[in-house]
Image 1 (cartoon, one colour):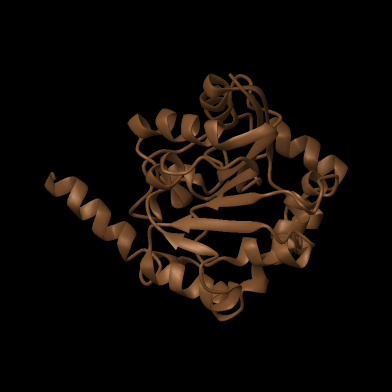
Image 2: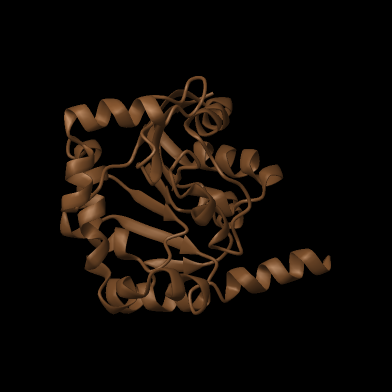
Length: 245
């Protein structure tokens, strides 16, 4: 194994106790603090789905998303993560065995389970560019007929995107709406991408969204060809992919 690969494995193995707790300490005190974001961004997509579907979260980290899914009625949930400390923390509030320790590709390749929904929140940016296609094809193969993939990644058109890109040592790649859509379209025939919504907009953020201010803002922050409808304040991009090719 190369020195680079060995060090990367060490970073991922210690991710929960180092990088994750530095970036998101509050969620390790109370996993429900992240729930307003899930409500604002995932609820509308999940609402029509049967509560009996099988859901897998790839890179489940602290397990707060799986806990939120359970709170909304989905009981057949599971996850996989490469960080031993995150797996232990997630299972401490979800129940033993809900999240398993392992690499996503190995986990998916070793099982022939038909998932109705696979979720990757803040995961795809950690995958080396040369490994993205293989991982997405394994996910596509794991989906049941009519199943879908939900992806949530940092938005590189965001105003503070450079901080988001480099705040984490394990980030390998950054995405705009165009590049995320292009990547997913290689594996899936039906792909949609949008900007994330704020869970609780501050007074300043609400002022920033007034109609006249919004027009001036959009005129000033022209992000390039094809990108002007992704507002620069959307911190994340959320994609839904269906119909594997």
